[in-house]
Amino acid sequence: MSGVGGLASPEFTGRPGSHRAAAAAWLTDLSCPSPWSPSRPCAANLITDVARDEFNSGVDANNFTKDIVVAETPARYRMLVKEQFGKLAPTVEKLYPLARFASPYTAYRTIMADSGSVCPMLQLDKKTSKYMPVYADLNADADNPAGENTTDVLGAQHSGSNTLQHFDTSKLDANQAALQQQILLSRTHLARAGSPMAPHTPAWQRYSAAQHPVMSLQPGDTSMTSPTSVAATQHNCSFWNNVTKY
Image 1 (cartoon, rainbow, N blue to C red):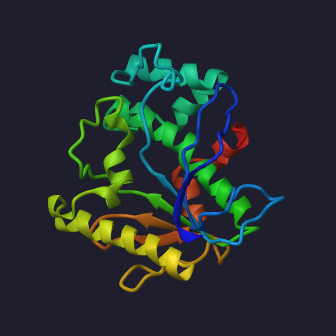
Image 2: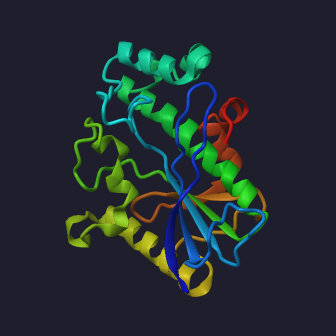
């Protein structure tokens, strides 16, 4: 069966503490059982995707029997970092000093996105691209096209920018509509031709190409690829890859 199919990545467990890495994938072959199984590689092309800004909550985010704590204050930021990373907390706070961010909320959200989404995806791309064609993208859309309350736990995932392709185009501004069009064209072209490089979209090479390009999805026809090393540096992946088991 051909088409564009969405999958979720396996769970990645961190040390200390644990969290899940969110990586979406789109396959050209929906009959493919799993693109992450080296023993059963799929004859399909793959787009991996994560958002730069994922979520902002503690380790109990998936336990609905407990109150979810959000980093609304410096004290809560430090509490959540300690809860999530244990003895690594002082190092994490040095890498992500509160003075560098607009709020404790965005500081902790950045930590969780880097450790649980962006860096694991880059590791996933490196491994999976050995067995099948992989195209990697990072959703860097900082806008909020759905008008969600991003200070709310559920809205904190910026699910608006992550699922932009599902919105009514008439309700988007020109910049967001351009990004929506790019996402739709790239996904459907992957299904039809095995490549996301549809006409009128940015050049997008396989992850296995020189410098391992990653597409940065941005509004207003400004999306572009850059070497993996750029994303890895921006998101402190040298640190996270050494202290977290994916």
